[in-house]
Image 1: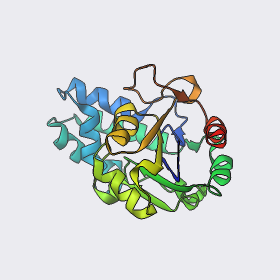
Image 2 (image 1 turned 120 degrees about the horizontal axis):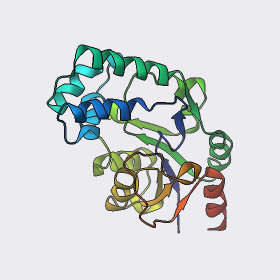
Image 3 (image 1 turned 90 degrees about the vertical axis):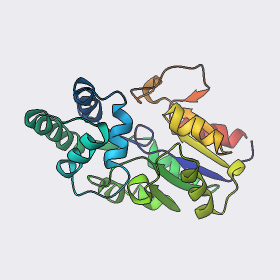
Image 4 (image 1 turned 30 degrees about the vertical axis):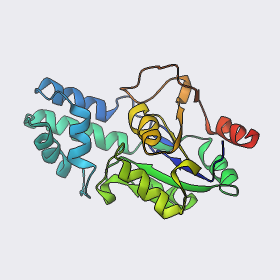
Length: 220
């Protein structure tokens, strides 16, 4: 394959929270119990398409997107879980060494569906500085797998879609979405399994670390 640029997802690809309870899944259960049928998209639409101050400000918007109303107790519990998990976010140990290795050969981009708050680790860890462009849905208003998200990265890197390789843990958003936009794509399954809670094994070729990615690209 001919690859000029690498586009990375963020969550569960480069970084994750080590908290024992995933706050997104916990909130999703609350929304589902309240009657929301597509709680993940409700969370994304509610807090990942524009800047927000914090989780407390985001919850009413999420409820509106879900078409439900959480109890005061559920809302407080969701916010507390989120704040605890936000303090536990870390990069996977293979991330920075491999990005430093790869950016000598490839143009690098970060493309993520994410909220705007509790994201200071992008700067403090040095992660953001490794990329030529950082495109977050909370800033652009566009969620993967919308083709416009991938097109914007290509425009920023001056790279054709076929020259870009998307690496992410989510089949629909990162792999299928990228391919439908003309990119190449590769699934990453950290710890041997997908961390994305809605991901099933489709027999797709995958990697488990960025060490493997670097080796694949070197061979290519």
